[in-house]
Image (cartoon, rainbow, N blue to C red; front, side):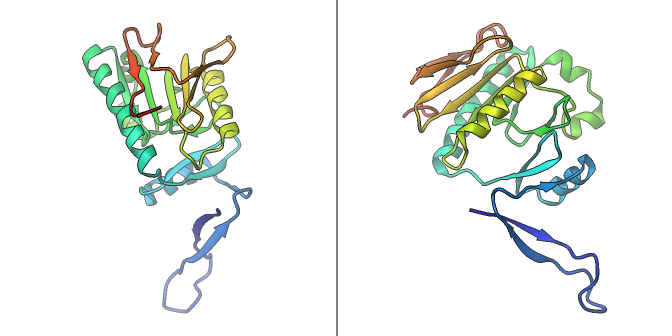
Length: 213
């Protein structure tokens, strides 16, 4: 399936009628390059879309989640936020939050967490925009439209840019992949829970309703 985009011509198509928009469908293999500033403008003007920007400036538009994926993601976020509120040592974020990684990519993991010290170090302006840091903890929950290879590349990018613990949860395969700096990827087959380890001490994610019903 292609990506539908709107392109605004530089010239007015008809005198006195303003700048018009035309629809443009892009094949999946075609990606648009955008600057950091252009990306911020795109997000502001298209709040209904979930967009990411690679380190090379490529624009990635992700399809809205289906019912199963949306339900699972809501449970994942609610459980992480509930723990973070009770724990008090950091802040949790949902999939609408963009993080500017050190390599320039802007990523929006399905769920993320940072220590309170990082949050407190941000200015009010920084908090209102994409957060200029890499989350210490990130989760990607695969939906049927997501390519496994692409999500694995994203997980490796998180770790390379400073994430201390990352989970790739794949309900279709019934597996969870655990990424940690300097260690091989650990693949778990239908685990009942996942541990936050020393990054999120005391956090245990119940995977009922997320990885399986």
